[in-house]
Amino acid sequence: MSDSRPIGVFDSGLGGLTVCKEVFRLMPGERIVYLGDAARCPYGNRSAEIIRQFGGQDARFLLAMDIKMLVVACNTVSSVAIDEVQKAAGDVPVVGVVLPGAKAAVSRTAEKKIGVIGTRATIRSESYTRAIQSLDPATKVYTAACPLFVPLAEEGLTDHDISRSTAQRYLYPLMDIGIDCLILGCTHYPLLYEIIQETVGTRIQLIDSAYWTAREAQEILIALNGQSPDRKAGFENSRFFMTDISPTFAETAAAFLGSKLLSVEKVPVENLGTGLPDAAPVIAPQRTG
Amino acid sequence: MSDSRPIGVFDSGLGGLTVCKEVFRLMPGERIVYLGDAARCPYGNRSAEIIRQFGGQDARFLLAMDIKMLVVACNTVSSVAIDEVQKAAGDVPVVGVVLPGAKAAVSRTAEKKIGVIGTRATIRSESYTRAIQSLDPATKVYTAACPLFVPLAEEGLTDHDISRSTAQRYLYPLMDIGIDCLILGCTHYPLLYEIIQETVGTRIQLIDSAYWTAREAQEILIALNGQSPDRKAGFENSRFFMTDISPTFAETAAAFLGSKLLSVEKVPVENLGTGLPDAAPVIAPQRTG
Image (cartoon, rainbow over all chains, first blue to last red; front, side, top):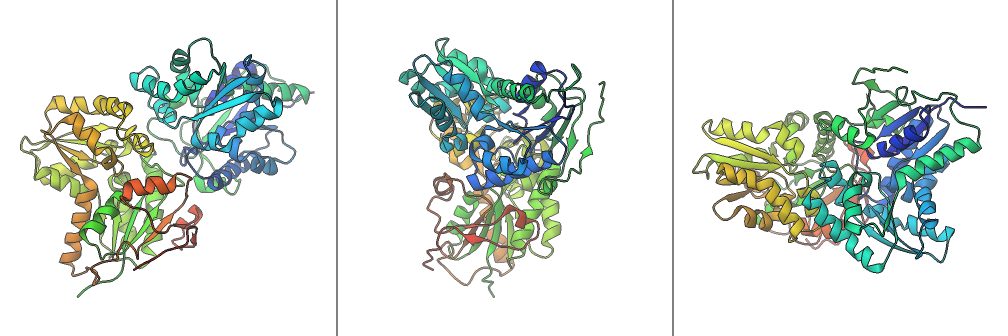
């Protein structure tokens, strides 16, 4: 048994491409249909009400495209509106980014002290704290909102003193508490991996939620006998939809994905609500699969 | 002759409140109807197409409310989509933030070397360069996009080493060129006024576009005999609409406005397109006017 339908993945912008990168690495034959709501990103400083509205719209757009699984590659939506997405998804399995990262951290912490960093909305929701404590009530969770990390990553300041000072400002208090695991609770943060590791030192293990989310998706597909019959060219046969394509798009996308996007299609933001894709390709698709 | 109708002011978020602050200071009797599109802010890194779409929607929402003048308190929309707004406005005079700042700088530069800082979209549009050179073709214009200034201002890091390092990174190249005027081409930047002045030194004069925009609005109202008959309580009788109200809203708004907002009304972002205000007050209005 196998299932050749694509996996749906969405994020507020391009950060979710870090999850796609891990999916393609673990499961090279899986196709993805990606939606990035770049016209309204970032979601992380908005109200829960707006995050629920936008997240639900994003989900319904992908659900209309015959996907076999929906990955919410946005920590903010996973934290604040996962129930909204699950309601829309019906029988389609939904994988958020919060639980996989929480599981990985719980099985790795020796001191039972886990740190979590993310956007304001993610941290305010206490989603990671609830997930971790449902897995092990004895584990203590310490959180810090890091709102400057997203713009720093998007500006490409991945090896700059400004990012280093910012990392120290955010992370020193967590280090003082004595955490031994740190969950990167935002899909942008893998771009700052080296600066974060350098700041916290090697005694603290970093948990990249993008990687663990791809692992969780793989485990569910195996359990459901829902893997693709193909063993390669998943990336080449994937589709990438964006609600806005800025002049710096291609460069930022490549930084997240680790390779150049072959094609991208633009979808008007008004169309998200209807769930009817009406996308015009803006870069001629060059598919090799 | 006088005109008691309100002035419409919009911005992508809360930054435009720096323009409102100057309007209330110069013309204490003028009422404002403000729209901040916080559900979709910031506009500064988006494509020109999306900025035109969002800016046109914002303008039409206010134009449906019987305003006597429309102030585009968003440098990004003023730079990229002012023609879209003017088209929607018909006979209602439109004041953007670009021309007033450009005029002030041209009349103040001795060396005829003006620096301009703003968002990526504002700088990419070359709107300030065109405005300045239409006023004086002999003046040279040097620009720098400062995308980290908005998140730093919103995080309240107005007196922090991270902001200081960032300011040096952006501003030292402009200082090396020998500018003697620097236009703050973004409504968020007045919050970083002191750090910017400290970085560039007193030889360089800062031009705050929020102040000069309020001055321009006043001059036009005087010329049209359109000033309010009231001499006070403009602020108390103003209305403030937002498409999203985040948990940190009140604090950020107060930083921009210089005083607490008395009331705020939420308008669903879907309603912007129709021009039909359908706003539910979320904070009970406490009007004293």
